[in-house]
Image (tube, rainbow, N blue to C red; front, side, top):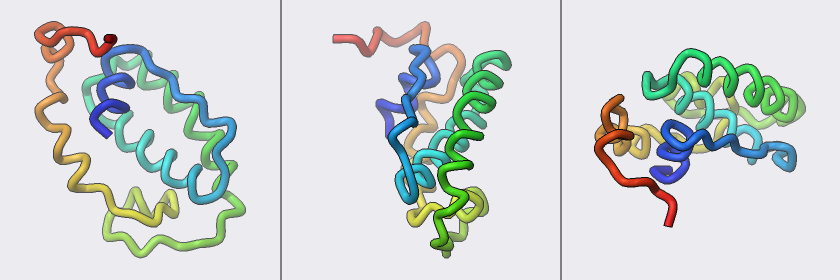
Length: 108
């Protein structure tokens, strides 16, 4: 989760969601929707990711009939079968705008 979040927020990573269907699309939609709600992204980047990826993933989950029993409303919206609140809480230290300037690049 940390690697995806940091790449999405600070390294202009755009995941390819073309091959996702069903449960995979639901989980990817949930994670991307959640990560793009944080203030780590500028308005343009956030709009690009939300407009470019989330509608595609929503279409791919339209026929996914499983319901989520999560307490997380966003997970229920996406029909995600897992609750990842703990994983998202673990990202708190990386959600500061100065993080990208104070840490080395993730590239090896």
